[in-house]
Image: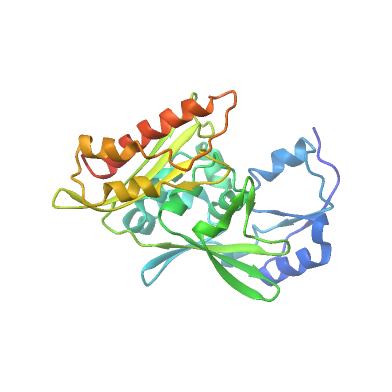
Length: 284
């Protein structure tokens, strides 16, 4: 199907993009890599009068260090995040999750910030970003503000990015030396996650000293499995100890029931995948 006719704007700076959004308001849609928006336009599920394409804004791309954090531009492609040596060294969990995002063709076009701003609960980047304690820098006409991951995901396909604002970069605290694993369950390759678990673990002398665990598609937003994290700290990195902690993976979750599985099935998957992910991250 052919999209409804719209005007196309290609700003080259963040301020130009913000000015376009201020001028056109609800009639405008922002396009990052286009991997989520274009199918929606083709199916005529949305019919904006103006599409504001961010691909020409060079300042929104790239990965750099800033003290104890990595800064990832919102328009950095999945491919670049996946293969960046800084990400592999300091935020391995993101690199592992990026490897599970769709296929190579989409990873070359889709963007890190675009996927996070789209906020699909079955998407593969929300839970890792949440687990690592990422911060989201959002720009508006009055300046920039920073939102913690715990407050960024608001509801199904809804984030803290307000009308007329743009997500410009994501700041990820360094987790250098931590083990990591992204355990994803799907029926066919390149599918959206039925359930997935993002785990980052720091082990000292065979004991888990710190743990971060995020859940994908176990609610309308990514979920931090804090009960699991608390149960892991101070425990030996053994299958028995991790298994005891993993039973708490479903605490506070509300997974959907759909054609891919009922809520009870997802509860079971979350516990199994959490055990696998933590064990792998801990090197057990």
